Length: 101
Image (tube, rainbow, N blue to C red; front, side, top):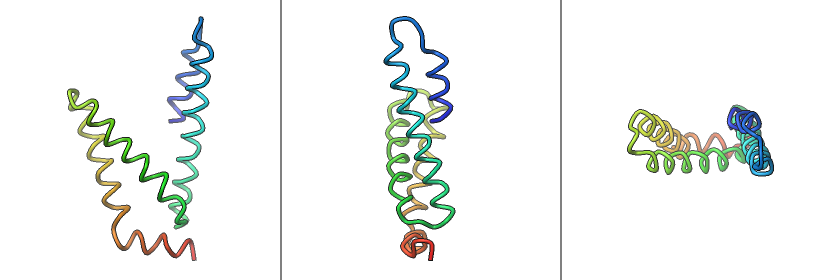
């Protein structure tokens, strides 16, 4: 997401400056939130589970949307589904319910 934000900034020009900047700000903020969630997961903090699961659900939906391009859709779907499955495992839930304790 942060890379997409940087690419959006580089692509800003002409009469679409507002759109380009708003897209860059959104992707930058979302990327920052995902970095924070990744750090939270490594520290076994329960709050981090929600943003990661939502992102993976979006990723699976995106994979479905680009299903006509298997080289893109298959990796997106496999990683999204694998992450969702691993995040809802009882051991993962138990580890995150301890909230870093």
